[in-house]
Length: 596
Image (cartoon, rainbow, N blue to C red):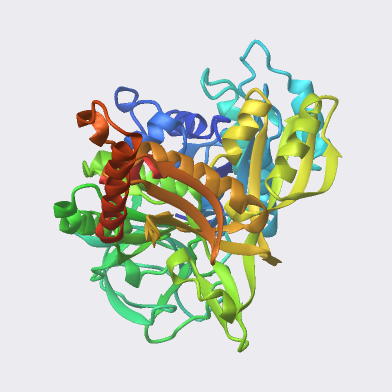
C-alpha cells in the first residue's frame, strides 16, 4: 500500500467511555468483520475483560476503508487499555501511531484518566480527534462536554465529533476525520529497516508472535533481523496483519502495522518497545524504550502445598502473555512454598490473581501487598526491600524512604471536605485544586503508594456515591518514619504477619491484627498471648483464654485451703505446659487475617 494512503491511530479514553464499542463499530462499518460474526467487545478476548468492561491487553487491527473521494485507505487501529496500571502499554501503543481518537462521555464529561491519557498522546505529538460519545443517552449534556474540552483539555470544541457508538451515529464522520486529519506516516530516513516491537504474545505452534510497526524499510519472510536491546539475531519466518484474527501477508512496508514470527522461544527475549533492524546495516534505536518495573509486590501461595509445581507452571504460562508480571520462588514458615510476585499496580495484581483462579483453576492465597522501600544503612549503602522479613535490624538503619504517587482526584463540589479528610487520613497532602466546571473539582495530591494499596479507590467511590474518579502517576521517594510491626504468638514472632507501617499507624494496625487473631487461633490448655511489637516494645496485646478443668469439683467440704492447694497445683502444671508447648496456627487463621 502507498504510504500516503495509510493512517495509524489509536483510541484513548477513561474506563467505560465506550472505547471498545466504538472500535467494534469501526470494524463493522469498514467491512473488516461480517455482520454474522459481529459480537460485543470484539477486541476484548478474555472473559475477564468482557465482564469488567475493561481492556487489559492492547489489540492491533487493520481495516480498509473506501472514503468519499473514492480512494481506499489502510487504517491501522491499535486498541489500548484505559487503566493507569497499563499506562506503559498505552505509551508504547501511542508511539506506533500518528493520531488518536479522544473519547469523552457526553453524560460524564472529562474524567481523571482522560486527562492522563491525553498528556501521554501530547508527549508523542499525535494529532488528536475529539469524539463526544453516548449522545443518545437521555441525560447526555453535549454543551457541557464541549465546554470541558476547551477549558480542561484546551481542545477547540468545534473540532469535536458528536457520536453514539452503540447506535452507530457519527461513525462515517469519524472515519472521514481519520482520513482527513491524521497525517500519513513518514519514513525516518534510517539506512535500513527500523521497526518498533510494541507488544507480543505466545502461540503454542509459532512461538513468540511480536506486534510491530514499520517506521523504515520493509519486513518480509526470510530476512535476518536484530533485536537491538536484547542483541538477539533472528530469521523472520512469517509476517502478517490482524483483522482482528491474524492473517499472513507477503510484506510489511513503511507505516504498516502487523506481526512477525521468528525462531524466538521465550517472550523474555523480546523486550517491549524494542527496535527491530537489519543485521547487516543496523539502524539507530527508536525512542521510547524503557524497561518496565513492577511497583507492587505480593506473595502467592497454593492453599494445598501439593499444588506448588502446578502453580509454578501456570505462573510461567501467564508471564508468556504479560511482560509486566514477574515472580520468584520464596518460602514462608506459615504458608509453606510459594512465589513473590511483582505487578505494575493494584488492578494488575487483581487481574493476575483472578486469571490464576479462573483460567487455571488454582486455589491460591495472596499475602498483604507491599511496595519497594529504599533503606539507607548506617554505612551509607542503600538496600531495596520489598518484604518485611528482609528489613535489616533497626540499629543498622539510618532512614527509610517510601515511594509516593501524584494522584489526580475528580469529585463533585459537595464532597471536597470528605475527600480532603480521606487524603489526610492516608498521610497525603493536597498540592492544589482546580475548578473544572460548576459541579466538579480536580485535586492534585501527593500520597504514599502503600496507603492507596488496599481500599483507597473503593473509599473514593463510596464517599462520592460513585461520581468520583482517580488517576495517579508515580512520583519520587520520600523519607518517612517507618517501622516493622511484628506479631508474636506465645512470644514467638510469626513472619507471615509482619508488615512495614508508619509509626503513627502501627498501634491501630497492631490492635486490629491482634484482635482478629484472637478470634481465629484455637484455644489451648493454657493462656496464649498475642502481642504486636515494634522492636522490643509491645504496643498491643490480646489473650486467648485457656480451657479450664474444674479440679475443685471433688472437694465437697472441709477447709478452703484444700481447694487452694489443688488450684495452685493446677497453676504450676499450666505454667510448665506453657513453657514447653508450641501454638499451632491453622492455615484458616492465616487466610482469615489476610482477608481482613
